[in-house]
Length: 118
Image (cartoon, rainbow, N blue to C red; front, side, top):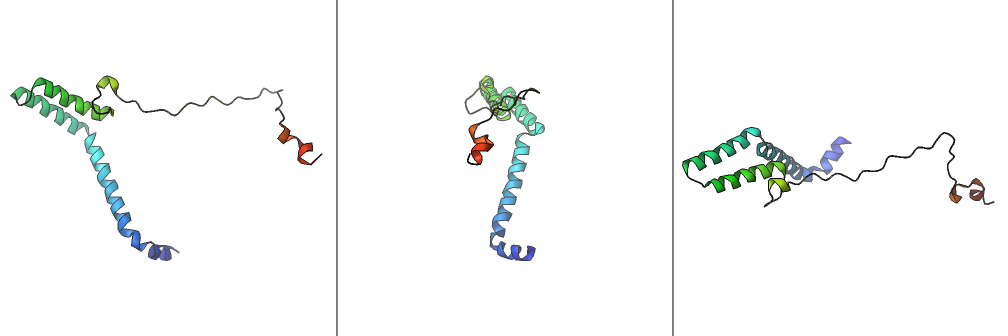
């Protein structure tokens, strides 16, 4: 069966290969984007450029804010105080348990006589 499946899906092999390559590239890009060494290097370059006079202190602050926004996931133009927090699914109330002597309320559909046609 594996040989037959392989032969039938052979035309899709380039698509599967391309998908695998794209996943590897995306994973590597994400790891580099959030790598602490790269983040520190970016912040140090901003500080060096500001000390050398290549950029103004305001430009340095904006660059630092862009790096921090990228880390916290804040949207474009948002400050650190408006950082997006991950949405939580709504919390369901805990299931209520019946007390030892409490019987289950019978619905008309649960009535055994009704099901038998009586």
